[in-house]
Length: 579
Image (cartoon, rainbow, N blue to C red; front, side):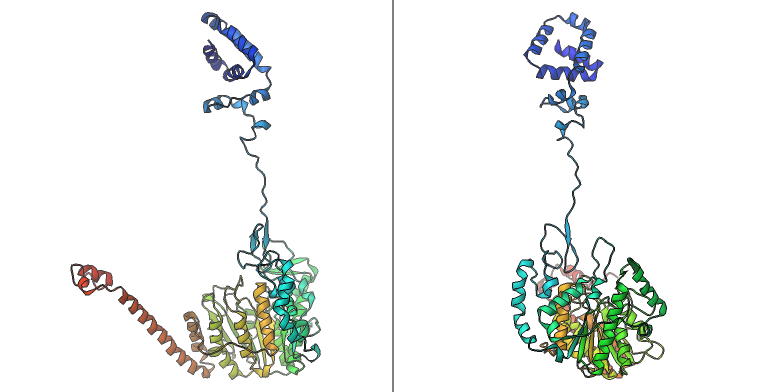
Protein backbone atom coordinates (compact mmCIF):
# COMPACT_ATOMS: atom_id res chain seq x y z
CA UNK A 1 0.00 0.00 0.00
CA UNK A 2 2.78 2.36 0.69
CA UNK A 3 4.11 2.18 -2.81
CA UNK A 4 0.69 2.82 -4.29
CA UNK A 5 0.14 5.85 -2.07
CA UNK A 6 3.47 7.28 -3.11
CA UNK A 7 2.65 6.78 -6.77
CA UNK A 8 -0.61 8.71 -6.49
CA UNK A 9 1.09 11.48 -4.56
CA UNK A 10 3.75 11.71 -7.26
CA UNK A 11 1.15 12.35 -9.94
CA UNK A 12 -0.70 14.90 -7.84
CA UNK A 13 2.22 16.73 -6.30
CA UNK A 14 5.76 16.06 -7.33
CA UNK A 15 7.16 17.16 -4.01
CA UNK A 16 4.97 14.90 -1.85
CA UNK A 17 6.66 11.70 -2.87
CA UNK A 18 10.01 12.72 -1.70
CA UNK A 19 8.77 14.35 1.49
CA UNK A 20 6.82 11.24 2.50
CA UNK A 21 9.62 8.87 1.65
CA UNK A 22 12.14 11.03 3.57
CA UNK A 23 9.79 11.01 6.59
CA UNK A 24 9.36 7.26 6.55
CA UNK A 25 13.07 6.71 6.42
CA UNK A 26 14.21 9.28 8.97
CA UNK A 27 11.32 9.83 11.44
CA UNK A 28 11.17 8.17 14.88
CA UNK A 29 9.52 4.89 16.02
CA UNK A 30 6.10 6.50 16.63
CA UNK A 31 5.90 7.52 12.99
CA UNK A 32 6.90 4.02 11.90
CA UNK A 33 4.10 2.58 14.08
CA UNK A 34 1.58 4.97 12.58
CA UNK A 35 2.71 4.00 9.14
CA UNK A 36 2.29 0.32 10.03
CA UNK A 37 -1.29 0.86 11.23
CA UNK A 38 -1.99 2.75 8.05
CA UNK A 39 -0.62 -0.14 5.99
CA UNK A 40 -3.02 -2.62 7.67
CA UNK A 41 -6.00 -1.07 5.89
CA UNK A 42 -7.37 -2.69 2.76
CA UNK A 43 -6.57 -1.46 -0.69
CA UNK A 44 -10.03 -0.07 -1.44
CA UNK A 45 -10.09 2.07 1.68
CA UNK A 46 -6.75 3.56 0.91
CA UNK A 47 -7.59 4.26 -2.68
CA UNK A 48 -10.95 5.68 -1.86
CA UNK A 49 -9.57 8.03 0.72
CA UNK A 50 -6.46 8.89 -1.21
CA UNK A 51 -7.51 12.52 -1.72
CA UNK A 52 -8.12 12.99 2.02
CA UNK A 53 -4.82 11.33 2.80
CA UNK A 54 -3.05 13.48 0.23
CA UNK A 55 -4.44 16.65 1.77
CA UNK A 56 -3.38 15.50 5.21
CA UNK A 57 0.07 14.68 3.88
CA UNK A 58 0.41 18.08 2.25
CA UNK A 59 -0.67 19.89 5.45
CA UNK A 60 1.74 17.80 7.44
CA UNK A 61 4.56 18.51 4.97
CA UNK A 62 4.08 22.25 5.21
CA UNK A 63 4.66 22.09 8.94
CA UNK A 64 8.08 20.48 8.56
CA UNK A 65 10.93 22.93 8.60
CA UNK A 66 12.64 23.27 5.18
CA UNK A 67 16.10 23.26 6.66
CA UNK A 68 15.46 20.07 8.61
CA UNK A 69 14.22 18.37 5.46
CA UNK A 70 17.39 19.29 3.66
CA UNK A 71 19.55 18.07 6.49
CA UNK A 72 17.76 14.73 6.41
CA UNK A 73 18.48 13.99 2.76
CA UNK A 74 19.41 10.30 2.44
CA UNK A 75 22.93 9.41 1.41
CA UNK A 76 21.79 6.85 -1.18
CA UNK A 77 19.98 9.34 -3.45
CA UNK A 78 20.02 8.58 -7.14
CA UNK A 79 20.27 11.22 -9.84
CA UNK A 80 16.53 10.80 -10.46
CA UNK A 81 15.84 11.51 -6.79
CA UNK A 82 17.92 14.64 -6.97
CA UNK A 83 16.07 15.80 -10.04
CA UNK A 84 12.67 15.23 -8.45
CA UNK A 85 13.72 17.06 -5.27
CA UNK A 86 15.36 20.19 -6.61
CA UNK A 87 13.68 22.29 -3.93
CA UNK A 88 15.69 20.47 -1.31
CA UNK A 89 18.95 21.87 -2.71
CA UNK A 90 18.64 25.56 -2.00
CA UNK A 91 21.60 27.78 -2.86
CA UNK A 92 21.15 29.68 0.38
CA UNK A 93 21.54 26.55 2.47
CA UNK A 94 24.79 26.78 4.42
CA UNK A 95 24.91 22.98 4.89
CA UNK A 96 25.08 22.43 1.12
CA UNK A 97 28.04 24.70 0.45
CA UNK A 98 29.96 21.71 -0.92
CA UNK A 99 27.81 21.71 -4.02
CA UNK A 100 28.90 25.14 -5.26
CA UNK A 101 32.40 26.23 -4.15
CA UNK A 102 32.67 29.84 -3.05
CA UNK A 103 34.47 31.80 -5.80
CA UNK A 104 37.08 34.03 -4.21
CA UNK A 105 39.23 36.65 -5.99
CA UNK A 106 42.77 35.32 -5.88
CA UNK A 107 45.42 38.02 -6.26
CA UNK A 108 48.57 36.83 -8.00
CA UNK A 109 51.55 38.35 -6.22
CA UNK A 110 54.50 39.35 -8.37
CA UNK A 111 57.71 41.37 -8.24
CA UNK A 112 59.82 43.16 -10.82
CA UNK A 113 63.51 42.38 -11.04
CA UNK A 114 65.68 45.27 -9.87
CA UNK A 115 68.31 44.32 -12.42
CA UNK A 116 66.34 43.84 -15.66
CA UNK A 117 62.76 44.93 -14.68
CA UNK A 118 61.26 41.61 -15.80
CA UNK A 119 58.20 40.33 -13.91
CA UNK A 120 58.39 37.25 -11.66
CA UNK A 121 55.95 35.37 -9.42
CA UNK A 122 56.19 36.07 -5.71
CA UNK A 123 57.28 32.54 -4.75
CA UNK A 124 60.37 32.79 -7.00
CA UNK A 125 63.52 34.27 -5.43
CA UNK A 126 65.74 34.44 -8.54
CA UNK A 127 64.67 36.28 -11.69
CA UNK A 128 63.66 33.89 -14.45
CA UNK A 129 65.37 36.11 -17.04
CA UNK A 130 68.65 37.31 -15.54
CA UNK A 131 68.97 35.24 -12.34
CA UNK A 132 69.17 38.26 -10.03
CA UNK A 133 68.00 37.73 -6.44
CA UNK A 134 64.65 39.18 -5.39
CA UNK A 135 66.37 41.25 -2.68
CA UNK A 136 69.37 42.22 -4.78
CA UNK A 137 71.83 44.71 -3.33
CA UNK A 138 72.98 45.98 -6.71
CA UNK A 139 71.83 49.53 -5.97
CA UNK A 140 74.06 49.63 -2.89
CA UNK A 141 77.07 47.60 -4.03
CA UNK A 142 76.81 47.72 -7.82
CA UNK A 143 77.76 44.69 -9.86
CA UNK A 144 79.96 43.51 -6.99
CA UNK A 145 76.79 42.49 -5.15
CA UNK A 146 76.04 38.80 -5.14
CA UNK A 147 73.62 37.66 -7.81
CA UNK A 148 72.20 34.78 -5.76
CA UNK A 149 72.35 36.05 -2.17
CA UNK A 150 70.01 38.49 -0.42
CA UNK A 151 71.00 41.87 0.95
CA UNK A 152 72.17 40.45 4.30
CA UNK A 153 75.13 38.65 2.71
CA UNK A 154 76.20 41.38 0.33
CA UNK A 155 78.56 43.41 2.52
CA UNK A 156 80.94 40.51 2.97
CA UNK A 157 80.82 39.62 -0.74
CA UNK A 158 81.48 43.22 -1.75
CA UNK A 159 84.41 43.68 0.62
CA UNK A 160 86.07 40.50 -0.57
CA UNK A 161 85.66 41.41 -4.22
CA UNK A 162 86.93 44.99 -4.02
CA UNK A 163 89.43 45.02 -1.19
CA UNK A 164 92.49 44.96 -3.45
CA UNK A 165 91.04 47.54 -5.82
CA UNK A 166 90.28 49.96 -3.00
CA UNK A 167 93.89 49.77 -1.85
CA UNK A 168 95.11 50.66 -5.33
CA UNK A 169 92.78 53.58 -5.94
CA UNK A 170 92.96 55.05 -2.44
CA UNK A 171 96.62 55.98 -2.97
CA UNK A 172 95.68 58.69 -5.45
CA UNK A 173 93.91 61.88 -4.45
CA UNK A 174 91.19 63.61 -6.40
CA UNK A 175 93.20 66.84 -6.59
CA UNK A 176 95.73 65.49 -9.09
CA UNK A 177 93.41 63.15 -10.99
CA UNK A 178 93.47 62.96 -14.77
CA UNK A 179 89.93 61.60 -15.24
CA UNK A 180 86.80 63.58 -14.45
CA UNK A 181 83.31 62.19 -13.84
CA UNK A 182 80.22 64.28 -14.37
CA UNK A 183 77.36 63.32 -12.07
CA UNK A 184 74.56 65.06 -10.20
CA UNK A 185 71.87 63.41 -8.08
CA UNK A 186 69.23 65.80 -9.40
CA UNK A 187 69.20 63.78 -12.62
CA UNK A 188 67.65 60.95 -10.60
CA UNK A 189 64.45 63.00 -10.29
CA UNK A 190 63.69 62.35 -13.95
CA UNK A 191 61.38 59.34 -13.81
CA UNK A 192 58.12 58.03 -15.18
CA UNK A 193 55.25 59.16 -12.95
CA UNK A 194 52.38 57.20 -14.46
CA UNK A 195 52.08 53.73 -12.96
CA UNK A 196 52.05 51.12 -15.72
CA UNK A 197 52.13 47.34 -15.88
CA UNK A 198 55.91 47.30 -16.21
CA UNK A 199 58.72 49.60 -14.99
CA UNK A 200 60.25 51.81 -17.67
CA UNK A 201 63.72 50.54 -18.70
CA UNK A 202 65.21 54.07 -18.64
CA UNK A 203 64.99 54.58 -14.89
CA UNK A 204 67.02 56.36 -12.17
CA UNK A 205 68.41 53.03 -10.94
CA UNK A 206 70.72 52.97 -13.97
CA UNK A 207 72.83 55.78 -12.53
CA UNK A 208 72.53 54.42 -9.00
CA UNK A 209 73.95 51.03 -10.02
CA UNK A 210 76.93 52.57 -11.85
CA UNK A 211 77.64 55.00 -9.03
CA UNK A 212 77.46 52.14 -6.50
CA UNK A 213 79.91 50.08 -8.57
CA UNK A 214 82.39 52.96 -8.86
CA UNK A 215 82.13 53.62 -5.13
CA UNK A 216 82.60 49.94 -4.25
CA UNK A 217 85.72 49.82 -6.43
CA UNK A 218 87.10 53.03 -4.90
CA UNK A 219 87.11 54.75 -8.29
CA UNK A 220 84.58 57.53 -7.72
CA UNK A 221 84.80 59.19 -5.33
CA UNK A 222 88.47 58.38 -5.00
CA UNK A 223 90.50 58.15 -8.14
CA UNK A 224 88.31 60.35 -10.37
CA UNK A 225 87.49 63.97 -9.70
CA UNK A 226 83.99 65.43 -9.94
CA UNK A 227 83.05 68.56 -11.83
CA UNK A 228 80.32 70.93 -10.69
CA UNK A 229 77.02 70.60 -12.54
CA UNK A 230 75.20 73.46 -14.24
CA UNK A 231 72.25 73.82 -16.55
CA UNK A 232 73.11 74.30 -20.21
CA UNK A 233 72.25 77.77 -21.44
CA UNK A 234 69.60 78.54 -24.03
CA UNK A 235 72.25 79.84 -26.45
CA UNK A 236 74.24 76.59 -26.22
CA UNK A 237 71.13 74.48 -26.80
CA UNK A 238 70.10 76.56 -29.81
CA UNK A 239 73.32 75.50 -31.56
CA UNK A 240 71.94 71.94 -31.56
CA UNK A 241 68.12 72.08 -31.35
CA UNK A 242 65.39 74.29 -32.74
CA UNK A 243 63.79 76.90 -30.51
CA UNK A 244 60.46 75.07 -30.77
CA UNK A 245 61.99 71.85 -29.46
CA UNK A 246 63.62 73.62 -26.53
CA UNK A 247 60.33 75.37 -25.64
CA UNK A 248 58.41 72.08 -25.72
CA UNK A 249 60.89 70.45 -23.34
CA UNK A 250 60.75 73.48 -21.04
CA UNK A 251 56.95 73.30 -20.89
CA UNK A 252 57.21 69.97 -19.07
CA UNK A 253 58.39 71.86 -15.97
CA UNK A 254 54.76 72.89 -15.50
CA UNK A 255 53.33 69.37 -15.91
CA UNK A 256 53.21 66.55 -13.40
CA UNK A 257 53.48 63.96 -16.19
CA UNK A 258 53.78 64.17 -19.97
CA UNK A 259 54.94 62.20 -23.00
CA UNK A 260 56.75 63.24 -26.17
CA UNK A 261 56.24 59.78 -27.68
CA UNK A 262 54.59 56.70 -26.14
CA UNK A 263 57.97 55.62 -24.70
CA UNK A 264 59.57 59.03 -24.05
CA UNK A 265 58.25 60.45 -20.79
CA UNK A 266 58.79 63.60 -18.78
CA UNK A 267 57.81 64.91 -15.37
CA UNK A 268 58.22 68.30 -13.73
CA UNK A 269 61.95 67.62 -13.11
CA UNK A 270 62.84 66.24 -16.54
CA UNK A 271 63.73 69.51 -18.26
CA UNK A 272 66.05 70.41 -15.38
CA UNK A 273 67.69 66.97 -15.48
CA UNK A 274 68.16 67.19 -19.28
CA UNK A 275 69.78 70.62 -18.99
CA UNK A 276 72.06 69.40 -16.21
CA UNK A 277 73.12 66.42 -18.34
CA UNK A 278 73.87 68.63 -21.34
CA UNK A 279 75.71 71.17 -19.16
CA UNK A 280 77.91 68.45 -17.64
CA UNK A 281 78.82 67.13 -21.11
CA UNK A 282 79.66 70.61 -22.38
CA UNK A 283 81.87 71.40 -19.37
CA UNK A 284 83.61 68.02 -19.52
CA UNK A 285 84.41 68.57 -23.22
CA UNK A 286 85.84 72.02 -22.50
CA UNK A 287 87.87 70.78 -19.53
CA UNK A 288 89.32 67.86 -21.51
CA UNK A 289 90.23 69.85 -24.61
CA UNK A 290 91.77 72.66 -22.57
CA UNK A 291 93.94 70.13 -20.73
CA UNK A 292 92.54 70.63 -17.24
CA UNK A 293 91.80 66.88 -17.22
CA UNK A 294 92.99 64.17 -19.58
CA UNK A 295 89.65 62.48 -20.22
CA UNK A 296 86.22 62.08 -18.67
CA UNK A 297 83.05 60.09 -18.23
CA UNK A 298 79.62 61.77 -18.29
CA UNK A 299 77.42 59.74 -15.93
CA UNK A 300 74.24 61.43 -17.13
CA UNK A 301 70.60 60.87 -17.98
CA UNK A 302 68.24 61.24 -19.75
CA UNK A 303 70.22 59.91 -22.72
CA UNK A 304 70.50 61.96 -25.89
CA UNK A 305 71.54 60.35 -29.17
CA UNK A 306 67.95 59.92 -30.47
CA UNK A 307 67.09 63.58 -29.87
CA UNK A 308 67.18 65.38 -33.20
CA UNK A 309 66.97 69.01 -34.22
CA UNK A 310 63.23 69.27 -33.68
CA UNK A 311 62.08 66.24 -31.70
CA UNK A 312 62.55 64.19 -28.54
CA UNK A 313 62.27 60.42 -28.94
CA UNK A 314 63.72 57.09 -27.81
CA UNK A 315 63.94 58.17 -24.12
CA UNK A 316 66.07 61.18 -25.20
CA UNK A 317 65.33 64.91 -24.64
CA UNK A 318 68.53 66.85 -25.50
CA UNK A 319 71.44 65.48 -27.52
CA UNK A 320 74.29 65.39 -25.01
CA UNK A 321 76.97 64.13 -27.41
CA UNK A 322 76.15 66.84 -29.97
CA UNK A 323 76.31 69.52 -27.26
CA UNK A 324 79.70 68.17 -26.17
CA UNK A 325 81.01 68.15 -29.75
CA UNK A 326 80.10 71.79 -30.30
CA UNK A 327 81.50 72.72 -26.88
CA UNK A 328 84.82 71.11 -27.85
CA UNK A 329 84.83 73.07 -31.09
CA UNK A 330 84.05 76.25 -29.18
CA UNK A 331 87.11 75.45 -27.03
CA UNK A 332 89.29 75.16 -30.14
CA UNK A 333 88.84 71.67 -31.62
CA UNK A 334 88.62 71.78 -35.39
CA UNK A 335 87.62 68.16 -36.00
CA UNK A 336 85.56 66.00 -33.67
CA UNK A 337 84.96 62.25 -33.91
CA UNK A 338 81.80 60.71 -32.43
CA UNK A 339 81.75 56.91 -32.16
CA UNK A 340 78.33 55.58 -31.18
CA UNK A 341 78.35 51.95 -30.00
CA UNK A 342 74.85 52.02 -28.54
CA UNK A 343 72.85 49.07 -29.90
CA UNK A 344 70.36 51.54 -31.43
CA UNK A 345 71.28 53.90 -34.22
CA UNK A 346 71.81 57.50 -33.07
CA UNK A 347 69.45 59.01 -35.60
CA UNK A 348 69.40 62.34 -33.76
CA UNK A 349 73.18 62.76 -33.79
CA UNK A 350 73.32 61.78 -37.46
CA UNK A 351 70.64 64.33 -38.33
CA UNK A 352 72.39 67.15 -36.46
CA UNK A 353 75.76 66.59 -38.22
CA UNK A 354 74.51 65.17 -41.51
CA UNK A 355 75.90 68.13 -43.48
CA UNK A 356 78.89 68.90 -41.28
CA UNK A 357 82.38 67.89 -42.47
CA UNK A 358 84.02 68.92 -39.20
CA UNK A 359 82.25 66.16 -37.24
CA UNK A 360 82.71 62.51 -38.24
CA UNK A 361 79.92 60.28 -36.96
CA UNK A 362 80.48 56.49 -36.84
CA UNK A 363 77.75 54.23 -35.50
CA UNK A 364 77.72 50.47 -34.84
CA UNK A 365 74.19 49.23 -34.22
CA UNK A 366 71.59 46.56 -34.85
CA UNK A 367 69.67 47.35 -38.00
CA UNK A 368 68.22 44.15 -39.47
CA UNK A 369 67.18 45.83 -42.69
CA UNK A 370 65.44 48.69 -40.88
CA UNK A 371 63.33 46.43 -38.64
CA UNK A 372 65.21 47.30 -35.43
CA UNK A 373 64.47 50.60 -33.66
CA UNK A 374 64.64 53.35 -34.86
CA UNK A 375 64.93 51.87 -38.37
CA UNK A 376 67.53 54.34 -39.61
CA UNK A 377 71.28 53.85 -40.06
CA UNK A 378 71.74 51.75 -43.17
CA UNK A 379 75.22 51.54 -44.68
CA UNK A 380 74.05 53.77 -47.55
CA UNK A 381 73.41 56.74 -45.23
CA UNK A 382 76.75 58.51 -45.64
CA UNK A 383 75.97 62.21 -45.21
CA UNK A 384 74.58 64.85 -47.54
CA UNK A 385 75.35 68.16 -49.28
CA UNK A 386 79.11 67.88 -49.48
CA UNK A 387 79.54 65.93 -46.26
CA UNK A 388 79.34 62.48 -47.87
CA UNK A 389 81.64 60.04 -46.12
CA UNK A 390 81.44 61.84 -42.78
CA UNK A 391 78.65 59.59 -41.66
CA UNK A 392 79.62 55.91 -41.35
CA UNK A 393 77.02 53.34 -40.36
CA UNK A 394 77.92 49.73 -39.51
CA UNK A 395 74.50 48.06 -39.40
CA UNK A 396 74.43 44.54 -37.94
CA UNK A 397 72.00 42.26 -39.73
CA UNK A 398 71.05 40.25 -36.65
CA UNK A 399 71.09 40.17 -32.86
CA UNK A 400 73.58 38.36 -30.68
CA UNK A 401 76.58 40.30 -32.02
CA UNK A 402 79.56 39.95 -29.68
CA UNK A 403 83.09 41.13 -28.99
CA UNK A 404 84.74 39.65 -32.07
CA UNK A 405 82.42 41.35 -34.55
CA UNK A 406 82.74 44.73 -32.84
CA UNK A 407 86.52 44.57 -32.56
CA UNK A 408 86.77 43.31 -36.14
CA UNK A 409 84.73 46.31 -37.32
CA UNK A 410 86.97 48.62 -35.27
CA UNK A 411 90.08 47.17 -36.88
CA UNK A 412 88.88 47.36 -40.49
CA UNK A 413 86.45 50.32 -40.54
CA UNK A 414 86.44 52.54 -37.46
CA UNK A 415 90.17 52.99 -36.84
CA UNK A 416 91.26 53.31 -40.51
CA UNK A 417 88.66 56.02 -41.17
CA UNK A 418 89.22 57.76 -37.83
CA UNK A 419 93.01 57.78 -38.30
CA UNK A 420 92.64 59.34 -41.73
CA UNK A 421 90.21 61.91 -40.34
CA UNK A 422 92.71 62.73 -37.52
CA UNK A 423 90.30 64.19 -34.95
CA UNK A 424 91.28 66.76 -32.35
CA UNK A 425 88.70 65.44 -29.93
CA UNK A 426 86.91 62.08 -29.57
CA UNK A 427 83.49 61.40 -28.05
CA UNK A 428 81.99 57.98 -27.39
CA UNK A 429 78.21 57.74 -27.30
CA UNK A 430 78.49 54.84 -24.88
CA UNK A 431 75.24 52.97 -24.74
CA UNK A 432 75.72 49.65 -22.98
CA UNK A 433 72.56 48.02 -24.33
CA UNK A 434 74.64 45.86 -26.68
CA UNK A 435 76.06 44.25 -23.54
CA UNK A 436 75.41 40.64 -22.65
CA UNK A 437 72.13 40.28 -20.76
CA UNK A 438 70.49 43.52 -21.86
CA UNK A 439 66.73 42.96 -22.32
CA UNK A 440 66.40 45.45 -25.20
CA UNK A 441 69.64 44.97 -27.15
CA UNK A 442 69.92 41.16 -27.02
CA UNK A 443 73.58 41.25 -28.07
CA UNK A 444 76.69 39.74 -26.48
CA UNK A 445 79.38 42.39 -25.88
CA UNK A 446 81.29 41.83 -22.63
CA UNK A 447 83.14 44.31 -20.39
CA UNK A 448 86.35 43.01 -21.97
CA UNK A 449 85.00 44.02 -25.38
CA UNK A 450 84.17 47.53 -24.19
CA UNK A 451 87.60 47.72 -22.58
CA UNK A 452 89.28 46.92 -25.87
CA UNK A 453 87.20 49.36 -27.91
CA UNK A 454 87.87 52.17 -25.42
CA UNK A 455 91.57 51.40 -25.46
CA UNK A 456 91.65 51.56 -29.28
CA UNK A 457 89.88 54.94 -29.34
CA UNK A 458 92.10 56.37 -26.59
CA UNK A 459 95.01 56.31 -29.05
CA UNK A 460 93.27 58.99 -31.15
CA UNK A 461 93.28 62.77 -30.65
CA UNK A 462 96.14 62.62 -28.17
CA UNK A 463 94.03 60.76 -25.63
CA UNK A 464 91.44 63.57 -25.38
CA UNK A 465 88.43 61.35 -24.93
CA UNK A 466 84.98 61.93 -23.47
CA UNK A 467 82.61 59.00 -22.81
CA UNK A 468 78.93 59.97 -22.64
CA UNK A 469 76.44 57.49 -21.21
CA UNK A 470 73.52 56.64 -23.50
CA UNK A 471 71.42 53.46 -23.17
CA UNK A 472 71.83 50.20 -21.26
CA UNK A 473 69.05 48.61 -19.22
CA UNK A 474 70.51 45.62 -17.38
CA UNK A 475 71.96 47.13 -14.21
CA UNK A 476 74.63 44.46 -13.75
CA UNK A 477 75.75 44.73 -17.38
CA UNK A 478 75.72 48.51 -17.54
CA UNK A 479 77.58 48.97 -14.24
CA UNK A 480 80.28 46.39 -14.96
CA UNK A 481 80.80 47.72 -18.50
CA UNK A 482 80.93 51.37 -17.40
CA UNK A 483 83.41 50.50 -14.65
CA UNK A 484 85.61 48.66 -17.16
CA UNK A 485 85.60 51.70 -19.48
CA UNK A 486 86.53 54.12 -16.67
CA UNK A 487 89.41 51.86 -15.66
CA UNK A 488 90.79 52.30 -19.19
CA UNK A 489 90.41 56.07 -18.87
CA UNK A 490 92.44 55.85 -15.65
CA UNK A 491 95.26 54.15 -17.54
CA UNK A 492 94.37 50.52 -16.98
CA UNK A 493 96.01 47.97 -19.26
CA UNK A 494 94.14 45.96 -21.87
CA UNK A 495 94.78 42.24 -21.80
CA UNK A 496 92.82 41.36 -24.95
CA UNK A 497 94.87 40.03 -27.87
CA UNK A 498 93.95 41.58 -31.21
CA UNK A 499 95.52 38.87 -33.35
CA UNK A 500 93.37 36.27 -35.05
CA UNK A 501 90.06 38.02 -34.40
CA UNK A 502 87.57 35.86 -36.30
CA UNK A 503 84.19 37.50 -36.96
CA UNK A 504 80.92 35.74 -37.60
CA UNK A 505 79.89 35.30 -41.20
CA UNK A 506 77.16 37.93 -40.80
CA UNK A 507 79.67 40.31 -39.22
CA UNK A 508 82.13 39.82 -42.07
CA UNK A 509 79.44 40.49 -44.67
CA UNK A 510 78.39 43.68 -42.88
CA UNK A 511 81.95 44.99 -42.73
CA UNK A 512 82.47 44.18 -46.42
CA UNK A 513 79.29 46.06 -47.33
CA UNK A 514 80.41 49.13 -45.38
CA UNK A 515 83.91 49.06 -46.89
CA UNK A 516 82.54 48.81 -50.41
CA UNK A 517 80.40 51.92 -49.84
CA UNK A 518 82.91 54.00 -47.87
CA UNK A 519 85.86 53.28 -50.20
CA UNK A 520 84.57 56.07 -52.43
CA UNK A 521 85.26 58.59 -49.68
CA UNK A 522 88.13 56.90 -47.81
CA UNK A 523 90.49 55.31 -50.38
CA UNK A 524 92.72 53.88 -47.63
CA UNK A 525 90.02 51.21 -47.09
CA UNK A 526 90.78 49.51 -50.41
CA UNK A 527 93.51 47.26 -49.04
CA UNK A 528 91.27 46.04 -46.21
CA UNK A 529 88.45 45.38 -48.65
CA UNK A 530 90.65 43.23 -50.88
CA UNK A 531 91.97 41.20 -47.95
CA UNK A 532 88.51 40.58 -46.61
CA UNK A 533 87.27 39.56 -50.04
CA UNK A 534 89.89 36.81 -49.98
CA UNK A 535 88.78 35.85 -46.48
CA UNK A 536 85.20 35.65 -47.70
CA UNK A 537 86.29 33.44 -50.58
CA UNK A 538 88.05 31.17 -48.08
CA UNK A 539 84.80 30.95 -46.12
CA UNK A 540 83.02 29.85 -49.30
CA UNK A 541 85.69 27.24 -50.12
CA UNK A 542 85.55 25.85 -46.58
CA UNK A 543 81.77 25.67 -46.78
CA UNK A 544 81.89 23.75 -50.06
CA UNK A 545 84.56 21.45 -48.67
CA UNK A 546 82.37 20.68 -45.66
CA UNK A 547 79.40 19.99 -47.93
CA UNK A 548 81.44 17.57 -50.06
CA UNK A 549 82.75 15.88 -46.93
CA UNK A 550 79.24 15.54 -45.57
CA UNK A 551 78.04 14.04 -48.85
CA UNK A 552 80.90 11.53 -48.92
CA UNK A 553 80.03 10.30 -45.46
CA UNK A 554 76.67 9.04 -46.72
CA UNK A 555 77.97 7.41 -49.92
CA UNK A 556 77.03 3.70 -50.08
CA UNK A 557 79.49 0.94 -50.99
CA UNK A 558 80.19 0.17 -54.64
CA UNK A 559 78.31 -3.15 -54.65
CA UNK A 560 75.16 -1.32 -53.42
CA UNK A 561 75.62 1.49 -55.89
CA UNK A 562 75.73 -0.78 -58.94
CA UNK A 563 73.49 -3.57 -57.74
CA UNK A 564 69.75 -3.92 -57.90
CA UNK A 565 69.30 -0.60 -56.06
CA UNK A 566 71.10 1.43 -58.71
CA UNK A 567 67.96 3.36 -59.59
CA UNK A 568 67.25 4.17 -55.94
CA UNK A 569 70.84 5.36 -55.51
CA UNK A 570 70.56 7.79 -58.44
CA UNK A 571 67.27 9.16 -57.14
CA UNK A 572 68.63 9.74 -53.63
CA UNK A 573 71.82 11.44 -54.82
CA UNK A 574 70.01 13.65 -57.34
CA UNK A 575 71.60 12.15 -60.46
CA UNK A 576 68.35 10.81 -61.85
CA UNK A 577 66.10 13.20 -63.77
CA UNK A 578 62.93 12.46 -65.67
CA UNK A 579 62.99 13.61 -69.28
